[in-house]
Amino acid sequence: MIDPSHLLDFATQLPHPSDIGIIKPSGGFNLGAALAGLGAFFGASQFFYYAQQKD
Image 1: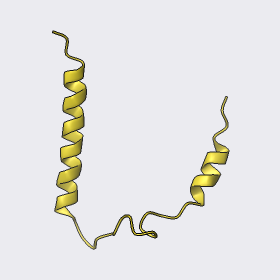
Image 2: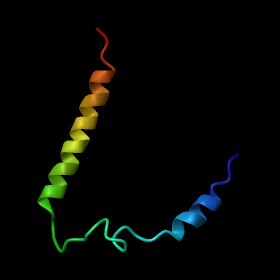
Image 3: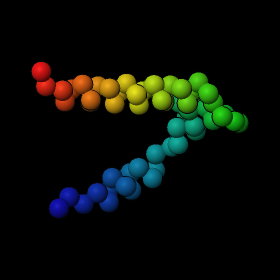
Image 4: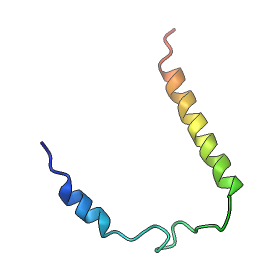
């Protein structure tokens, strides 16, 4: 069995994305981000649904 404890130790030492400026937290509900997330989810679900279709 693979022991993932060394990966967890490494992950706990990484900076949070907001600390290095990748993600900027907003004070409230971000409608644009919510719509983008829903669009990505819907697109991925469509991809997997049609990928399983057989002619």
